[in-house]
Image 1 (cartoon, rainbow over the protein chains, first blue to last red):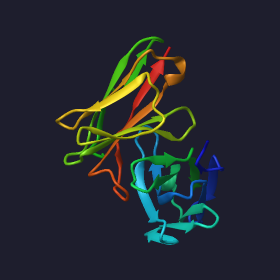
Image 2 (cartoon, helix red, strand yellow; image 1 turned 60 degrees about the horizontal axis):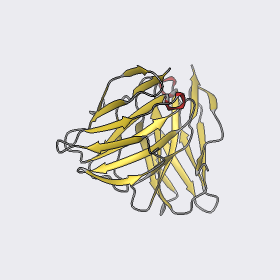
Image 3 (cartoon, rainbow over the protein chains, first blue to last red; image 1 turned 30 degrees about the vertical axis):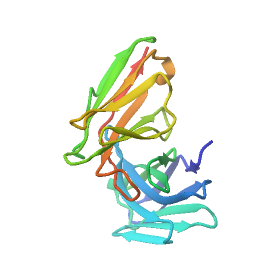
Length: 112
Length: 114
């Protein structure tokens, strides 16, 4: 049972345009949501997070939006850069934060 | 460099064998997590330790076990290996392991079971 779903395995975007990566979740007990970025042959690195009490969090070119009623979050990257090409994982934590549930990832290609 | 080290980087073994994966957390981090990433899948949470004690368990098979030692390094033991255990195994560490505590991931150990 996939509690965190990233339905797009890949996304291709032109440099300078907006990248929008989507994530859906099923468990209403999730309290905290995160995005990780992963380059080949490296471990995931934390990118940005959002608490369930907020609907938006921004950090430079990266913004995460949370729609609790729809159980949906998205990551916006503006403007997209070739160095953003990587696999992006959406993740969620329940109250207490002991377990982190990851989605399957979306591979982003940013074309120069 | 996240500061989390994992050894070995690659491991090739046969079905039925037993292997041990090692993780050293970032300096000062008390919590260690183990994840499994099979081909084209997301990371599956296996287990979390905090200061030597097991704190949370995910989808960890009974053939797998882990521990965190007094010096805070952790080992993941995989026994009676099957072809389906071939995967990337990641270790992560964080300061205390709670909500909003950033996890820092190591580079992973790639296990191939032949």
